[in-house]
Image 1 (cartoon, helix red, strand yellow):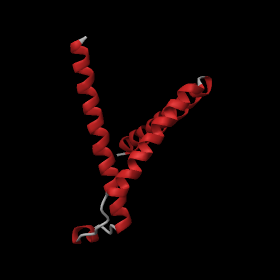
Image 2 (image 1 turned 135 degrees about the horizontal axis):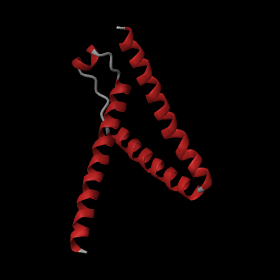
Image 3 (image 1 turned 90 degrees about the vertical axis):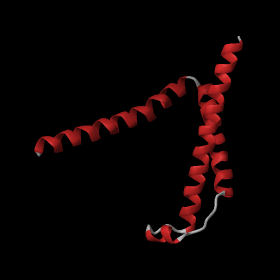
Length: 107
């Protein structure tokens, strides 16, 4: 059983190193090219606006099933906003892929 614990701790370490690398290395690269940082910030702002709109239209009702899991009206609305945002971003991705493939076919 000790080998399993050691391997799990090794896996945790690798996940932490990968997460730090995924966060820190693009920031270092962005410092050498500030225009790319502006494009990234614009993308984050757009996703934030999509989330805020999704959060605004999501419902905050709490059913009996939600009460069992201790979900409040606020957390229900946040979860609804995240789900709607995910659906919208997936739809945008699928539409973009289809558009790109059709455009490639026509050229």
